[in-house]
Amino acid sequence: MDKTQARLMSVDYLAGGAGRLRGRRAFGPGPRDVPEAGAMRGLVALATGNSVLRVAVPVFTLIAGYFLASVLRRARLSEWVGHLLVLYAVWSVVYLLFLWPYYTNRPLGLTAIELTLGFMHLWFLEGLAISGVILGAVRLLGSGAVVASAVVLGLVGVALQYARMAGLSEMPVEHYRNGPLYLYPYLVMGWLMAVHPPRLSTALLWADGRGGAGPDHRRKPVLAAPHRRGAAAGDPGRPPDPVSGAAAAAGHAAADA
Image (cartoon, rainbow, N blue to C red; front, top):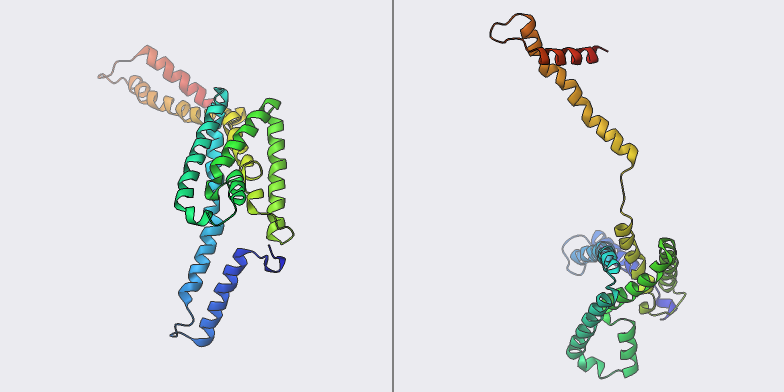
């Protein structure tokens, strides 16, 4: 990669959009040589391609890590990894068949390297399988080792990505956009959420229980009070009930205390 052309794609979008808007302001409305719609499309592509759509792969990996916890408990990791690799192989063959004219005009070694590192956007399947194998091995050392390995590999991936974006390295994107350096930290996050789910503290549960019991204690004397007042007034249609009267008296005594 030429270092003189190393740039951020988002900067290109913003520069192009700002240039078109400046032309729109200078020449006024009307001429088609200043496409305002093109500037808006560039800004929309920046907002979606570099923000919203970037969340898809991490979210899918988090979900996969959450359900991988049950796979590991049942000791079925090899089956899980095998399914992913079969999907990767099948879809790679499908893509090669459709893109055969392109791949026949390039060295076979480059195609083999691309298939090994992750073929086009199918790299997610291969990377997820590799990340699952790493997690299955490291978890035998404990949760602390899993977290430490995720932090270290994640920092290495981020450093390599920023080095390439800044023009400090000519490393291909496949060397850091892979399972260990990109997917593995998110897979660990999902696994941790399943193995160590968040729990409410005892103090919070106790406070919630007291808050729910308070109104009930205050309402009980109110329900018994009319019966007690009717009995005290000598209501002939409602004979006194000694049990209810005693309970009402006790309730009023507790409320007055």
